[in-house]
Length: 208
Image (cartoon, rainbow, N blue to C red; front, side):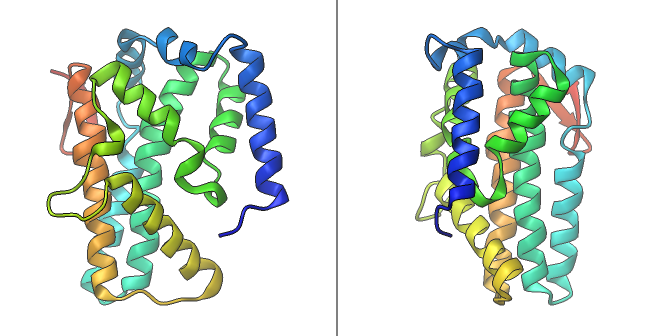
């Protein structure tokens, strides 16, 4: 999908807010966000992964009934819920402390037209700082590309289905589910473990 004037305006708005909040340098944002504050957020909001899990369950059911295109759409939604609602929003809320402003910034950064590029650097910095995980190197077992590249490809396919009426195949659906599962198990769960947290019944967050 091409980079439009709308995308440029979103980027400019986000950069302006970021410069105002952190005039020195961007690394300050990660340094200010301690593991204790993130852990506290999750324990106070233990159901942040529920929507992602429900979307994944819906995607799986759709593929079982032969609806590969719909499966891809819901799998991509699951990925974005795990990354946006369960990872990025807690970080931004913790940095800003004003819920309405935090929500606005999260929505700008994760605008679906921009795909992964809008928040890849922030998530990568978060994982390196809190869990010593190089997010850009994470990949599914046997996958030819890093997980972040697979996520970007999944979002691109989802957009093609939704906006241009293209059709997905059963292998597309299977890969979409595998990517969504990897985001949960290799990204979200690993960060929780680094914070001394875990999930019960696959979704609700509790302390170890």
